[in-house]
Image 1: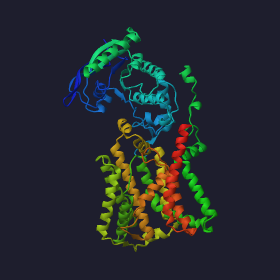
Image 2: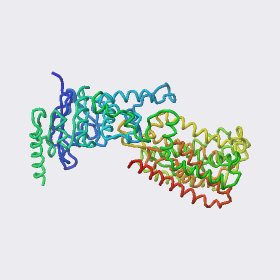
Image 3: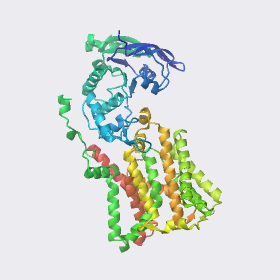
Image 4: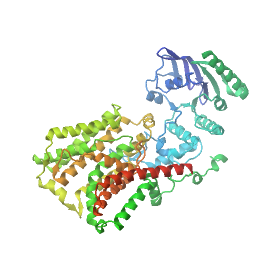
Length: 254
Length: 342
């Protein structure tokens, strides 16, 4: 049997007396996209931060391709093949697209200290290639601040892909896009799956998520209260189901 | 990619004005004018026109341009470092104090039997050391660079006063004095050092990670850190370079006057920062050009010279430089908003 891309078993996390995650378990098979829906404060960002190595977990187990992993820093998570794309995309807006994609890993030519110069040609060529592979070609010499929301998203994804991740975490991936551009994210996710990348998308905009994810999990007060296969349910079905769970949670909290 | 959504957006249609598309000289000029801000070019042009038509006939003369260049050298060398620090999102107020300290130090070395080489190395080392301290406090200590360098501005000046008891160090060393008098093909050493400093860093910035990270850290420090750029190490380098160039300025100032003056170069940081901002750099970091700083310096240095030649009281220089700073930035801000709307 092939290992799952990532498995979480009973992840718990508290900040002082506040229990944020009360035993979260989920499984993402290879080349699949898991959509985690939840309101503000449900624990979505905490879970992402644990998976990207920002926060340590209190209890539970994380398996990446069947291997138990332990993260103390964001670098550990990166080495385990997990890349995180933040909601604000964390791009240097004054730099062009290629410079952002290769930030921190600039391609250089020449040898020896003082002789290693930036290889602009190679970076632009490789940037164009990776951008082409995930979406539409866009001018790699354009400053990021002159790009549209969707194009910025592509740049952020292209940068993450340069680390060759097996799992991509995306926080509110559709927040930067207008509703009709959700198709852009859809197309992107399909291409990422083709490359063998698994994804966990996290959002409170469940109407977007149910259009793009294979599996939907509903996170309420630190627990996954419902989980279902997106392909075997109609949109209306899923919407009613999620809305009911989330409004119950809101009533319960009040 | 061959779907319709991609085909209907060819690269040429997607290029907005002011962005990099064509290559070559014209594109470079267009990009430079856009990044530096046309406001500076307008006031610089107006300045030359006014002084040339209404000022003294001596204004357009090689000897006068050399005089302007010598004045520019003091602020200009250290302005290269200030530009680097400001683009990387920092700020360096301590350059005037560093220059004074380094000037005194380099004068003291030759006066106590040291060589010219020892003198210049002392100035550079003093500057680099204080710069590294600035960088360490700002980076590892996470203190706002404004506060850090406001502190070192006072400390370094104080140390210079204590060590000299506020006495000037007059230099009798002939080689040192000659640096202030001799020329290379008609060009004073100070101007030569100024030009070499600009050319050197103008060469480095687009070609090395030094320049890439300077813009990246200034543009979005968190993004650079997430990408694995070692922020604190680079801050150390940027502030170190700024300090070292302030030290070089101190050395140049000392040989031009054949004296190390502990109270010298007071307040030059304000004029230097004015030049950097006039040159299109953003105080928020991420934006700026060395060429812009050079033009900003040229404007400020010409201003005083032109006013004096035109028989206007030099007191007006401060009023004129302050007003032009505000006007140039206002003009560029207005233009940016208009472009963003259009």
